[in-house]
Image 1 (cartoon, rainbow, N blue to C red):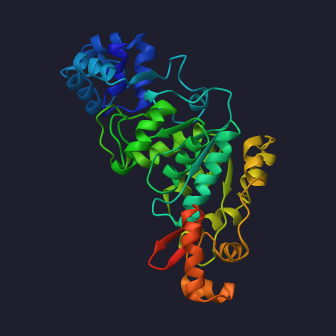
Image 2: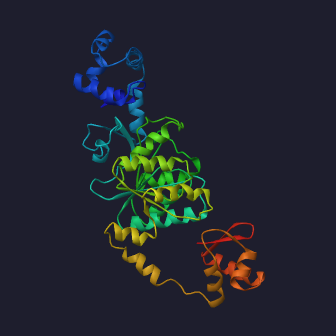
Image 3: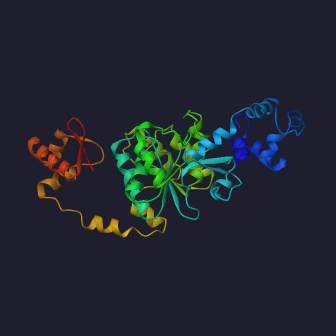
Length: 357
């Protein structure tokens, strides 16, 4: 497999041409042993691509391959039995995958949860909730481990004791973003990290649109939780539609720029995310029993607590606003908010602005 890794890691030659070279030669080892003159005569590569092959032969292939194994990274080329069937049928499949942990299970329903990096508390809460419900229902959650919606959806899946997989725009040996290091470590245990970039590849902007096609390809449906009118999440949605996948979008406030992209998707015919239960019903999956019990047995709040709690939402509200809506003094509202915070039912997002948990 060392020669197969060499061909997969070869930069400057498109995946389609690598496949053609391998198929015409019989193996990556044969490609490695082809002389420069013969490479020209094959009529597959341009001059600069031939030179890229010649230059690659001077690299420490063996050392790189050994280090990859020592880091616990699996190498899965396109012809391997382990290579996902879902990826084989897209127009431009990766030549190989590099994996830390596991690949998604074949034949098991997968859903992508994607959205804005700089999301609102509303988007974050919904991503967590959908991730948890889907995971508890046995649905695999796919995303990009990015800050914001991606990470929240995957954290929700972990909260639901499910399997979740992060498709990275860098090498799987690199944690990006750094603040998601805990999630990065958890994914290796409860799912996997996947990339078509060789280990050591830094997270460059050009790699992220390409990784989006893998996210959608590994998923049966794509959920867009929050997105601006122009965003990477909409690129993922467009690719998903081209791949024949179902796309759903979460509605939000019409005044929020982070919901505008979702509203555009809904205008164009995307499914509307009303609740996790409705989504599971539409997918013909029974609502997880423990979630039904959890909702049924939720602790009843005292009258004044309930009044303040009912005024809270996923959009932050100030103390004055809550005081008017509840018909209570600011002091009374603040007392109930402190109680709700201690119960884990409310959170202060910024000075005197609160949201429901």
